[in-house]
Image 1 (cartoon, rainbow over the protein chains, first blue to last red):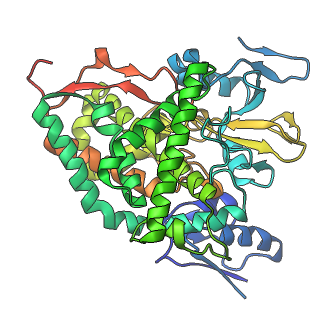
Image 2 (image 1 turned 180 degrees about the vertical axis):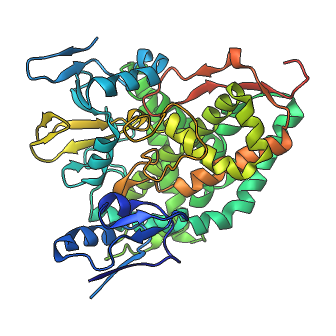
Image 3 (image 1 turned 60 degrees about the horizontal axis):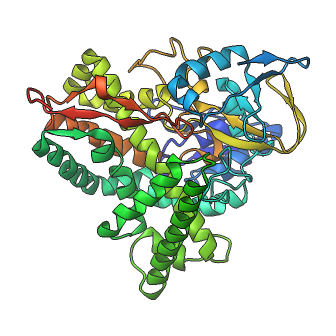
Length: 63
Length: 405
């Protein structure tokens, strides 16, 4: 699985940082960035929670 | 006022709606946080008060343990506790949130910015003409409601009395006065009729506004928004943005009056206004806190929570937690506020945060531009007698420099 954040959609609402603190952080432009590109299988639920929680639907989980 | 019982739980009479709390809000929350990360209040039907930043953030994040279904207020609001999507958990929460998000997104607000600037400029120009004014009723209380009602599509001439009725319900939250309660019930009935009237208009003739979407569009995943749900959504949009944004502006103005060097700096470097706004909402919580209901027995911050317990996440305390913010009581324009819970945290993070930031920035820019020598009469500044919903001012009298009030 690979986490992608669409920077056209992201508006720095920080919902993913809250829901999956191990997987996301905000960069200097206040945009969400994945901290791990290919998270372990155990992190799948957390990644999905962040993707579902994103108010901008800016997070994609590929693979 | 506080004592520790045999189970090592700090019990207090903490009541965020009380007059006493309003007089000493910041000191009270700072003291309470240092006494116990989670305390037990015997006010209302009893509730937990969560004060430490990491615990408040954790509870907001963990919607499975801390549910919003019983509403975000203690005690429940007179307008009902079924606010949408505030009183929902995922996955239902997302369905409604996604209908609303596009209307409050950064890009949508950016498109509204010229109109917001024009609206605020007209209000501020009026203050300059008058020479003396009160920032609370004459500017801070007008802009947020006006913008939200305009996004909904409500005609400008109908907005005033609507906002007045909302304000009465907000100010008297927690009251037991029967006459007031009856008046609030009448207000609510009237507000509901207004909202449903607007929805019926949009079904007959849809326009390009949020009310038309609520009245006509299919929800993501199917089904329509019912009349009762439209009322719930509109109520929460207005309640959430009304006093919060107003409180932030007046907190900023009063803080700047007490710190003239900062006021000068922001006037000279208006590009730092957004940083100042983030610090002001951290220092003077526009939302005092948000309630959650515990969904299962669990340990939390050193206490044993039981299923069904209500817990109040005291944002005002978390935002000044020295474990999270160095020199928490100082306003520092260079501070990173990326972990600030001032706008909430997790799936319920403030829908209107881009709107609030924009309104506050434009208000400050235009105040500096059109009222360069304004003076606030600090002796006559009055804090609100209720701080249960947010750090609010009742009156912030001001005048143009050099004139007598």
